[in-house]
Every structure is written in structure tokens, then in C-alpha cells.
Amino acid sequence: MAGNVPEYSVSEISGAIRRTLEGNFGRVRVRGEITEFKRYPSGHLYFSLKDEGGKIAGVVWRGSVSRLGLAPENGLEIIATGKVSSYGERSSYQLIVERMEYAGEGALLARIERLRLKLAAEGLFDAARKRALPFLPDVIGIVTSAQGAVLHDIRTTVARRFPRRLLVWPVAVQGEGAAGQVAAAIAGFDAIDGRGAVPRPDVLIVARGGGSLEDLMAFNDEAVLRAVDACRIPLISAVGHETDTTLIDFVSDRRAPTPTAAAEMAVPARAELVADLAHRAARLTSGLARLTQTARLRLDRTAARMPDLPSLLATARMRVDDRGERLDRALPGLIERRRAALLATGRMMPSPLLLTGPGRARLDLVASHLLSGLRQALRDRRARTDRARLSPAPLAAMVRERRAHLNGLAGRLESLSPMAVLERGYVLVRDPSGVAVTRAADVRPGSRLELTFADGVTEVRAVRADSSQGQLDL
Image (cartoon, rainbow, N blue to C red; front, top):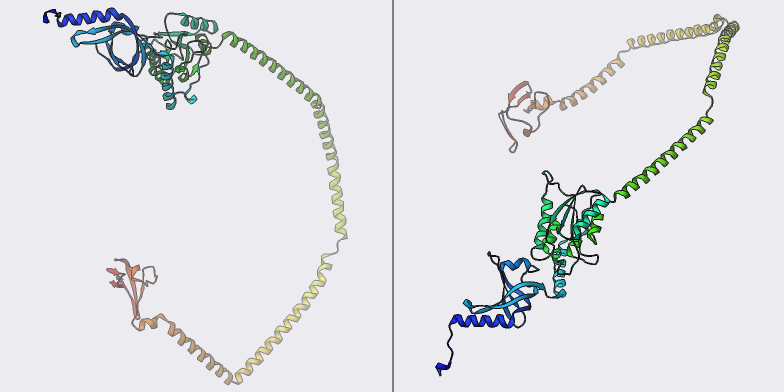
């Protein structure tokens, strides 16, 4: 029985399985979600594709990475195109992938929407972050493919509207590595300082032609969007056709429906500017002419209403001469009239003797009355004095009365005298300025004091003062 069973080596079985897999399946398209994704230093990509019922290992050789069509990552649902093969050393089979594509637009749109919500929450789409475009840039930076009609359209449009210097940074606009090249180009333009041979752009245009949603995915990449947000140069996005919308349109400062429209946004039309300047110059010239004419008419009307200045001066001069002549004639006559009136008034006034005579008589009469009164008063005072000498009793009584009153006042004064207090053993303390010192707290050690006793004054110096116990050492 054992002799009828064929015998194979391990290598023969592995090779047979490999030929069977590759012969029966050939090129296949496998749909699944990427997991366990790894990028090795050799450049090969290793991952697994899984769905609800199973999982298959996959590999992308280094030479096929640039032709994949998208950047693989964990959680991405794709359709992988390749062939099934086996790896005999591990007794496993795997899918050798040559190309990847997103598994339908629904998966792409869901991925884009998740990224849009994330960036919107961070504020990358806020209108406040948008920068204004320069009116007439000197240098325009362009990020696009070196081939195709996009670059040609931008060049011809700028040359037609207003020729400017263009700096082109050629990049891949789709496929593996496109997003990284676009992000690097934007960051590279922003890093130019303008002090070297390469000028710094005043505005950037990121553009590409139309395509499917998968073709435009490089402009929905998070690295590109963050490079646009970090760029300090105003940026115009022009990706796809008019109806195409990518996330870069939300982050950029301006969104153009086409590359040609982006060039029109970047530079104004020279002919339109020249026409506008000519129109403004014509309006300015016309306005100045109207203003000049109006001012001239106003000046003429004002001049017509003004009097003749030479005639006014001549009339005023004649009036001055006439007034001067009349003044020369009137002043001597006025003086004569005033002198005549003064003389007439002097003749009419009475003599000074007549005016002072009655007053002098009244004054002599009053003086006579005063003199006789004084004499009578003197006689009366002498008579009272003589009577007082004759009777000393009233005078003695008055003296006794005055002496008693004086003694009473002296007693009261003696009771109030500070010397009486000093006689009882008290001392009056004063500082050198003569102010009485009544509290020990007012005395400083070393202070000079005057002590007044009943029989004299003594100067002392304070050694120690204790205000809390009321003690003073001298």
C-alpha cells in the first residue's frame, strides 16, 4: 500500500503549490482593509488585507511603490491588483500587489470628510486666517506638474494680463509620493528668504488639471493641508475643474475654479489698469478745470462788487486835507473864545476879602466864648481845691478805703504766685527755650534742664528717664 503513495520533497511540494496558485489565479483584484502595514528600510511594503471572513498577507516590491497610485496606510479600504504566490520557506501564501485603488468613491469621501471635520475643529478653515493677495506681485511661485496644459495656461494668462516673473517648482500631482512633493514645494517656497539669487515669491499658485476623485487625492492629504496652513505667502488653489472641490480649497487663502482663473486672480489686467488710469486722469483734469473756472468766476464777481481802491484813497486823502485845514483855522478861534469867557467869569466873581470877612468875625466870636469858658472852669477848679485843703478827713477816708482794697488784691495775687508754690518745696522744670516740662516722657537722656527753686535757678542734665515708672535721674 505504501508503495502506491507518491513521495515528494518539501521543495517539490512548495513549488507545486506555488505553480498551482500562480497558474490558477494569475492576476487578481482583491478588496479589503489594510492592516499591519510596515515600510522596511529596503523599500518593500508589507501589510495584510482583511474583511469580515479572512485575511491575506500582501507585499509591494520596492520597484512597484512609485506606481501604486495611492499611499497605503492602516484602516484604508482598497482594491489591490496583483498575483497570488507562495513563500515556501514559511509555507505561506501572499498577494504580490502591483497597483492599489480606493474601494469606491464612498470610502474616499468618508475619509475626506473625517479629515475635513478634524481640520475644521482645529480652525484651519477660519476666514480670519486668510491672507489678502497682493495687488501687483513681482514674483509668482507655481506648484504644478512640469508637463501638461496647466503650466502653459498660467504662463500665457500672466503674460497677457501683466507680465511678471514666474518661479516653477515641478511636482507630481497624482500617484505615490505626489502629496509629499506638493507639501515640500510649498514649504520650500516659504523658506526662501529673498536675499540670495532666487527671489521670494509674493504669491503662490498650487494647480493641476481635472481628474477623478482618486487623481485629486494628493490635494486632500493632511501633509499638504498643513503645509498650506503654515505657509506665510498668500496661496491660491486651482485644483481640478470648476465643479471639483478638494480640502486644499478650504485651507488656501483664495480658491480658483481653474488654473487660468488663478492666474487672473494673481495679477490684474494691465490694459484695464491703463484704461482706468486714463479715465481717472480725464476725470481729474475735468474736475480741476471746473474748479479753476468756478474760482475764476467767483473772483471776477467779487472783484466787480469791490469799490475802486484808488478812488477811495483819493477821497480819503482829500477829506484828511480838508479836516487839517479846518483844524488849523478853528484852534486859534477856540482859544480866543475860551480866554474871553474866562476873563468875563473873573470880572463877575466877588473880592476874596468880602468872602472871608464874615467868617473871620464868626471865628473871633467863637474864640472869645471859648476863652471865657476856660477861665470860668479854672476858677471853679481852684475853688474846689481850696475847699479840699481846708477839710482833710474825706481825703484820709478815701486813702484808707483804697489801701484796704489794695491789700485784698495783694493777698489774692500772693496766693496765685508760683513762688508761693515753690516755697512749699516744689520745683519748676523748664527746657533751655524756657518751655515748662510737665511729663517725664518729654525728657530725653542727655537733655539740659533748668530747675527753678524758691531761692534761685539751677541747670542740670538728664541721665536717665523712665516714663513707665515716672522716674527721672539727673
